[in-house]
Structures are given as C-alpha cells and as structure tokens.
Length: 155
Image 1 (spheres, rainbow, N blue to C red):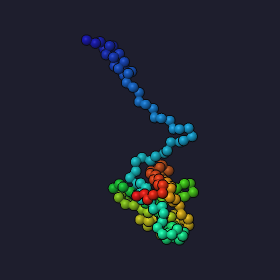
Image 2: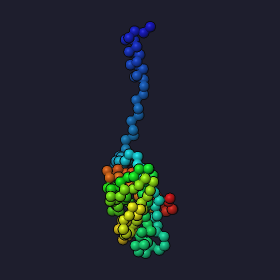
Image 3: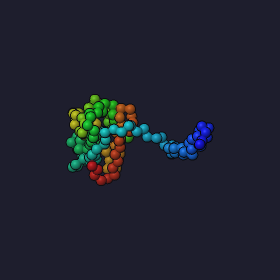
Image 4: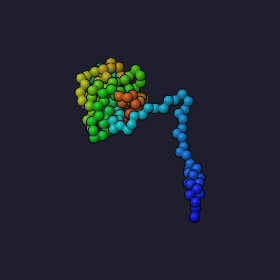
C-alpha cells in the first residue's frame, strides 16, 4: 500500500511527463497576423468581374461588373460599417443595410439608387480585374471573407 506522500509523488511525476502543448508558429518576419473575425455567415459570393458586352465605360457596362455579398445564415446581419475592397483606393463602405438571412446584395461598380438587393460604388471606372481579390471586413475592420479569381469565371 502506498503512503499519502508516495501517491503525491507519483501524481507529480506523472504530470511531469505529460507533454506541453506546442506553441503556435510565429508569423514570418515582416508579416503581421491577419485579424480574422469570428466565424460569420456573411461571405463574398459570385463575382462578375468582366461586364457583359463591350467595355465602353457606360454606366450600364460599369454596373454589369459586381460582387455579391451573401448571408448564408438564418438571422439578419446589419452591414453598417462593413467594407468590400480591392485595395486601399477601392473601398465600398456599406451604409445602414440589413441583410436578411439567406439573402444577397450585389455591389455594382457604377452609379445607381441603393436598394436592399443592389448597392452602387459610384465609380466611373472599372474596379475588378480578370485577376483580383475582394476582401470583406466587418465594422471592427476584421477580415470576414476574401475571394480571389484569376481569369476564369468564378461562381
């Protein structure tokens, strides 16, 4: 029979051999870790980066280029303060838009009247190239989703 001191020593020795959890790898030099939002049902959906027809910079042609933002969840999400961007020069700021559950909104390049299903960046130039990335951020500037494409139709 073990004494109380022997049992305590055995427990302590047993605990000493339990491996410590591995530390996460450090980010590469010069690279800050991405500030990701907690899981969100809002994602970048279909991208129409090459408007149909001739690229003549008409408003119709500009609005033929768009990025869809979709809420895949059941509950509505208020997108006020969220952004959709290509880079620091091409950023769309969502106004007070409540995106219902299981619904989408198209973010068009050109001008138009914002509705619950279509919003407009009011640009006079094409934004999305054949090879590009769209980044969706929440109102805390956390990356919610990104979508990259490279010259072929994305769905």
